[in-house]
Length: 137
Image (cartoon, rainbow, N blue to C red):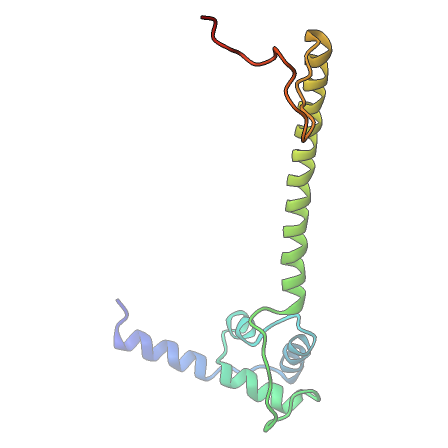
């Protein structure tokens, strides 16, 4: 469990850190280009949201203080990457299912040729007489 002394020490260490203008501007540029969200910047640089927003208001030409800003929960580039991965996964599944379907159709075709039986019934067709099983009395 954290002791009051360790918490105070951590607080003091964070309070005295400073970031160069270059790093601040780089973070703001990434946020503007949707390469990084504010929350991700806070985590990556271990800085508060207030500090990140202050950097944005100070160094951004797009986001100015006093203007309403809509922030998406996931940056566009990460969202696109996630969707592309999902598409790739689904295409692979569809490909596997198509191979399975082709295999089963070929097996049915071979079986029909070997046994001389029409396994695939056409939609709307009636069963041939004598093809069904009936009880003998």
